[in-house]
Length: 90
Image 1 (cartoon, rainbow, N blue to C red):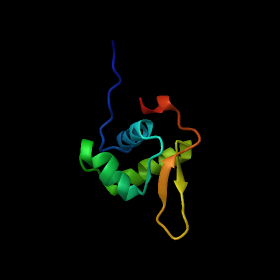
Image 2: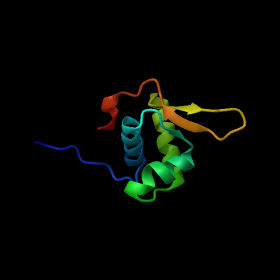
Image 3: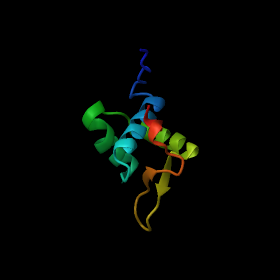
Image 4: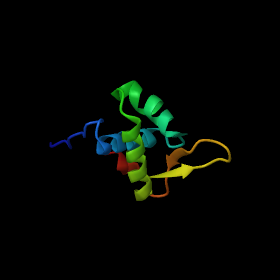
């Protein structure tokens, strides 16, 4: 049985994969880029740069996997997008 290699969490693709996996396990999760960096990724995978998180979010937003949630007067947060599928966390 061949397993798909896991991308390094320190690359944009690796960070995007970690975000997909988190959203698969927590479907109602939403947070800012800083919150995603600190609370979704760092506790289990270590520190990654905020820039890597922002780039991964931009990529995932373009794919429709995440969407921006912009409440009035608050920071931009991200949650599952319309094209997120449960199999996306692979």
